[in-house]
Length: 105
Image 1 (cartoon, rainbow, N blue to C red):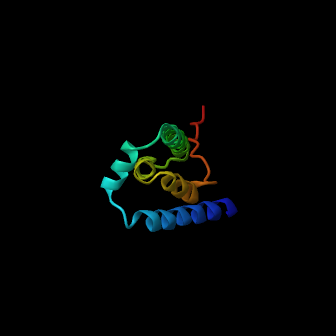
Image 2 (spheres, helix red, strand yellow):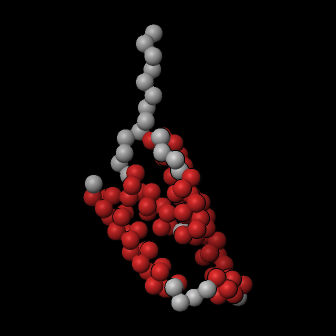
Image 3 (cartoon, rainbow, N blue to C red):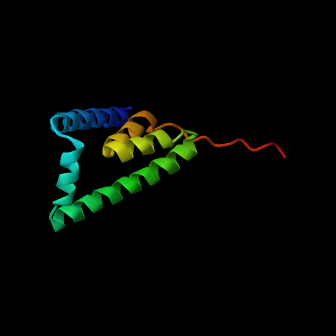
């Protein structure tokens, strides 16, 4: 239960920080920032994107084992970054796997 609370607090903190920093800006500024990024910034951005893809892969496999639909969390991750991963973990961490029962022989 404690890890789920921690994940929920991380999701909440990330959401608050994201809104605080992004609210006064626009998508045009994001595009401008990305097009004027220095080489190291591009490497960091690529690293973040790759880490998020690994996270989406993880939640897809984990959700499939637990019988949960991973698509909403994957879309949320693509749109908001790690917030989607934290939301998935806050809701589904520690849930038992859906193991199909075998028919008696």
